[in-house]
Image 1 (spheres, helix red, strand yellow):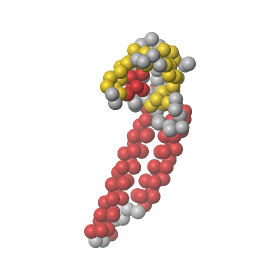
Image 2: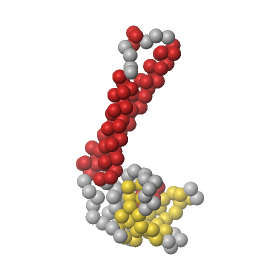
Image 3: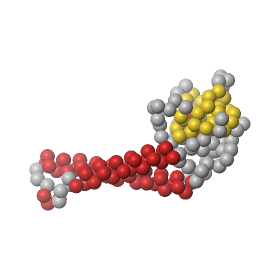
Image 4: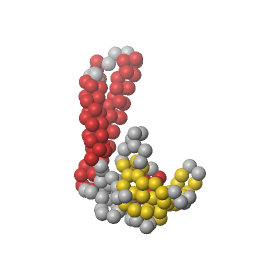
Length: 153
């Protein structure tokens, strides 16, 4: 794994910016329904108010996480040449001899069968590696290894 913040692909950055915009709008809507503490009525009103306050806190936490990831990505720059990073296209040979080429992405995409997310066991094992290196990672059936055959293929 790399020592610094990971770069982010343009598609993933757009998706995060879109999510951030949606979350901010949702937070504004929920926050607008919060009442003055003295205006809260019976226990049902208090419970409803508490639920909205909890929702605002959840939204604030997700907003902060996304903002932090966007800031970190801007500092990280592009992945180093010859090193697996977010956005890299990599060919890997598995223990059974099969080879697969895929790219490392930050956000899962059901429409992209060639994507391995950077936070998956294989993705984490590959980050920061070079062609010819062997990685070990955990699968549901136990630990396994793979060899990085090439990058950019």
